[in-house]
Image (cartoon, rainbow, N blue to C red):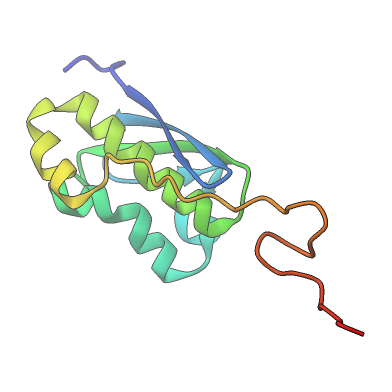
Length: 131
């Protein structure tokens, strides 16, 4: 593996998009110029982001640099997880069955349902009055 070799991938979830770059290193994670725990704050989101590394046991092999935009923290963490899984797949094709079985390579298709005209929200209706 060359010194300048790196793996790029894009992950998506809800309205969030994450651009991920894996560089051979010691396991540091940087998101939008901040440390992972500093950017997300909640431990559950940090665990979600680290899941692909823990599953494949490659945490100490790569440094992660990511740019995330759009959506909220939960969507951004999901997008980051998706991007990391795709980048790990580029680094080693043998990880595909493991990542696929865990469902990390599939983009989560659930999106916010749009508001319909003549209604209060996506599903909510205005109160009906007979008289």
